[in-house]
Image (cartoon, rainbow, N blue to C red; front, side, top):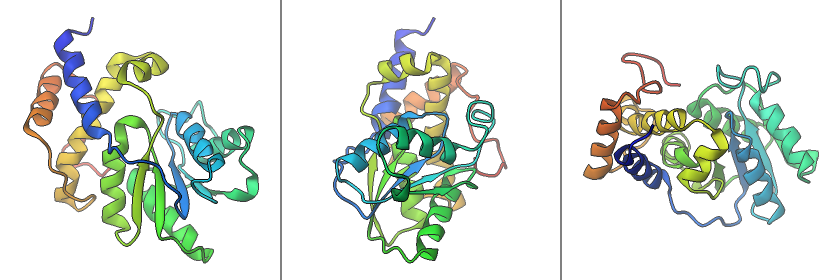
Length: 221
């Protein structure tokens, strides 16, 4: 049973992760690979709405996607986007990235190799990782404009879609923890974290929502 206080703290982290950007036309859309096919759905919707003429899907596999997406996250995202009407000619697959930093660096390298000019990027991620993805992208590719996007849904709707409240809260705490740790390691830009957000994260950690924390001394995941 998830207590009312835990839900309130999780909601505070969820709200903080939302960047509040309004999608607008950009040079390219980059869909960050994960277990969540909703990222592919949202990227395809943005393409159909004329928000980007080109899509990059980036991601290999991870322990959470190895069985569901054996050919790699980016490959499965491409298949889903094509089912939703995005032509294959408008999709670039980046199949090697295993973390957010590699998503950005490898996507940038592919676009540069193909001579595709980029001045702005629609960055499509899971809803609870908008801010983390944005902070990483700003650090690693600072000379383009970044517009964050994700599936528009509430925390309750996302929990219903994943069907595992504890896992979602663990992931929220993990995303928040990275906003604190990674700037010191040079992986993302610094973000101003409100006191109530930091306190909510600490309460959730004290309640045992710790499975997605960054291991001390570990490489970035």
